[in-house]
Length: 392
Image (cartoon, rainbow, N blue to C red; front, side, top):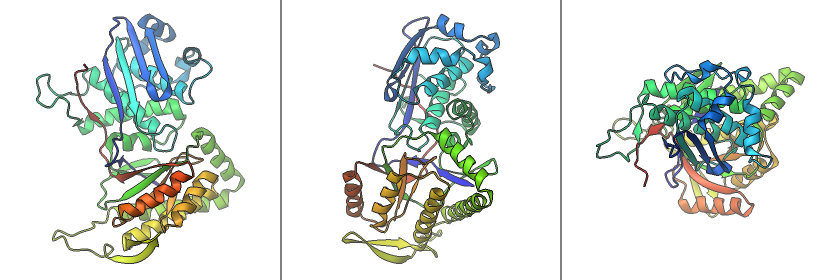
């Protein structure tokens, strides 16, 4: 079982936005992905030529189509030719996912699409899922499948929530985009990006949860890229070589995830605002020259994070940079673990609620001195939202 959360950065603007507008060229489609160095323009006739089966140009945005590589025999070569030899890693999959979602939802309509992101790409934070969710929501809003604020509304620049039925539609389209990028995704990343908050994934079933426990975390980017498909394949190969041992590790990881969910769903206060069992300070340790006060719940979560990281190392998805971060944060009595598929990417460190900002800065200084980059976050962010703005 896995439990994943939507993260909401209170101190840094942190989002993936897909801006979609009618193209200035009547017969053109423009895709701009600044973080990947992609800026492509195609006449609609060129896109039509790579779609070899007519039914693929009969958009039914309310009915999700499954991507089948056999139906797009020319797409891979087309994207490779468009990007050239020096494309940023992952750009080909991002462009392929766009062309599938664009033609499936809009057909052949002139549009300009610009996707910007403050999520580090390929760092284990679900940036590809957020990209697919933003694209799907933007395209569905553009074609009228998702309602936007009224033209004469007073708050047109305000981001508004999407109703749950439409979020489910966004999520299912985004999953198809994720299939193009990752091959066999679990669906958990696009679900948490779509719906927000906390998601539990077990035996193929995804359950959305609303956490009762406020949690802070420090996210540290190792600056090491990794290949999710290769990492997943490596775990599978290790499981074939050591089925009993790997099975025991997977069972332990499952038990840890179940306990984390139980803790997250435990209310921290009763209706009278009094402290409940688990909220009292039960541990005081030193974080450099400053004390770290931890509640019983925080102590349990720290222990579970430490155990989980050890187990993930055992299945072969850790990395020297990840272990280095874990050692640095452990010296401050803080526990860390890898995110996503591991192998690099980002590491999350739980921050006790009463840990001072001065103590956090000390940890960040040490990590950044080793070449890592850090930012703070809280769990339980919102899911997909839409806005309609006039571009100047």
